[in-house]
Image (cartoon, rainbow, N blue to C red; front, side, top):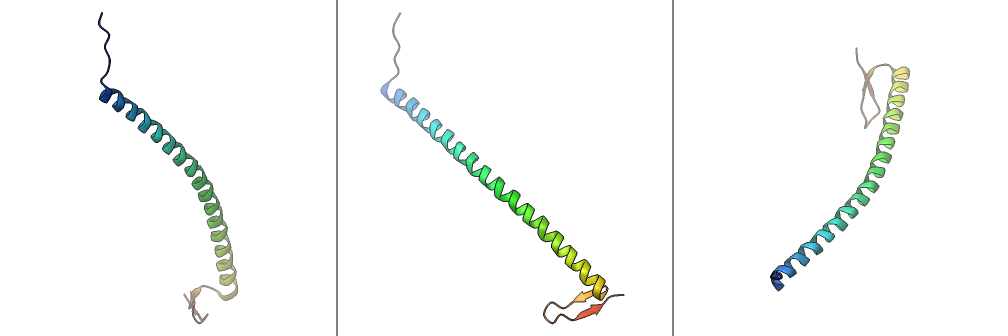
Length: 83
């Protein structure tokens, strides 16, 4: 039985594929690592937004209790009552 051997070009191409695949695996690992960091940052931002929303809502409620329903001119602080 004759021994079959790849050509040098074919062997080189296989080695290139192997190297490229290893590089892709490393790249996907780096992306997963970065995604974990981004997920933590996103969770923190969501918590901050929830805190912000509650503070803003509580403040709006306190203003409504004090001044009644109305529209506030943010530049002058003047309140125009709504009916």
